[in-house]
Picture (cartoon, rainbow, N blue to C red):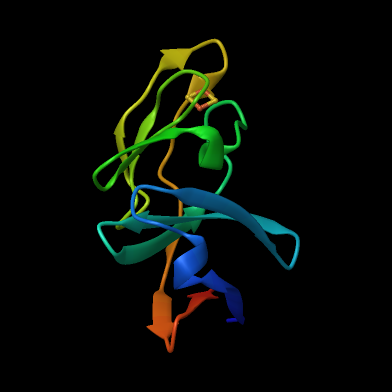
Length: 106
Ligand code: FES
């Protein structure tokens, strides 16, 4: 496991997301009503950057074909089934906040 400070709480306001690279791995970090969540940052269906998607509470919707993931556990809530394949569950990661610093454990 690698712990990495990814941003300050003041950098990521409620309802916002950022994409970060941790040891070459893309991770999306989101602020949902003051709670921070981290999940794999690339959609399992067609490799879209999930940080460009839309937040609806704990649900992150992919910007390309609208697969929906639960940020709390990376689970696919709904997703397309087509020639590009099927959306699969992603990994979520523990996030800690200490003195305004947001740290992800990958
Ligand atoms: Fe995300 Fe297709 S790339 S749903």
